[in-house]
Length: 270
Image 1 (cartoon, rainbow, N blue to C red):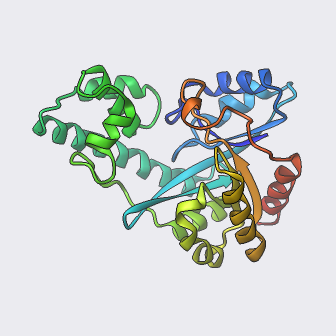
Image 2 (tube, rainbow, N blue to C red):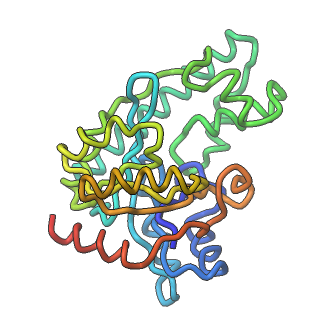
Image 3 (cartoon, one colour):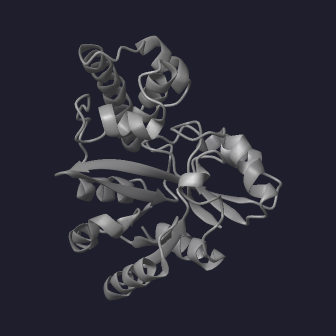
């Protein structure tokens, strides 16, 4: 199983239906589609999995900016048609659009011009994000890779970075709970200081088995999870086969189906 995946609805390489087919080809029993700040791919993924051996958990990954860092909150078994939840995601989408426009203007001033129209074309139906700006920078020849684009221009401390619409981590937890979902702290190694405050806000799980975390890191995070009675989830943060060289391939984590059952039970109790 893999409880942390992305599709073209945000910044993944595969469409929701393609992701489902890829998961089936790899013999997975379940995946959670957790696109960044959008649920636009869920209907297609669930429809593609209907009648197959794959179970699709409806999910989302909410992005939160904090001082000199980012905190991401995964939401599982959300009601992705909840009006208040969708209204907040609309704010994310609108904020991303304006943010990308400002980045393009900054890049031009820095001598690295790109076309905003091209950025929109790269994003397609997805919510515009920095990876789409990075790809436009690569295409324009200003950098040789997406990694260099972030390091040189659009990373958090780089000169063309623009702040986005802010959602605080505790507010993200509350938003997921109100949408009937189960909030889990994603890739928590660098943000363990947030675990206790988020537990107080209603955090239910911790992504212990994340991507390429080593055994020592997973053991440390498991202790945090046991201390606060959190469900230990896991996933690869899969964005596509071509990006797996920098993370882990779909399904390359040790997560049992019992975790899905625990999350589903928690959702049912909210």
